[in-house]
Length: 270
Image (tube, rainbow, N blue to C red; front, top):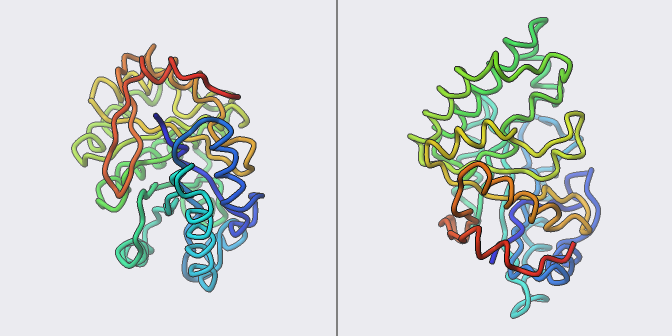
């Protein structure tokens, strides 16, 4: 059965609840595993207001290890990471990942950060969207990440200028590159709470992902324990409608496949 593959801790300064509380929520939901994937610390105060500090890196690993010990035999609690892809910081992230026994690494491009807006936002929303999607492929091609998260997040920056038909050729090219990199992609259920109220990515993009046989991981992006596993039944149905037969999660950086038909038979507690 599936793990919760995307969750956070208070160290990122915008989430609530300790890893042990997220594990308790996973247990209540009947999930056998939980991977904590808090935002990685970055150098030079990069988006420091939404991530742990560099001197909290050891603390992060410790609180996840404590939850793993507490829930051993009931919930498989794993140490993961949501690591930002950003030009100029790639080698720092590469070393950070190499030095840490991580079970799962999400690669993210966050267009809402001050640094991204300063360096990449223009007066042309379409060009900004194209830039963002190409950065997703750049991230995948580093080989650092198991999965690329919430892969149409840019639509919430200027939702009034979001027209998918203008981007299909760009997205097709980007997905070709991601497929060649053997990197999975995420269906992020928390998109329902954003300005465009749908899971990320949008259904047509999911069908394009399926056409390229790119594996998909479901993650709730839980910033409070109550949202662990949230939206999974709906996400499974959306994937099935897009043509997927299976979904994956990662353990020790290796994909674990689960048949969607079997997952849908699970007595989900929401």
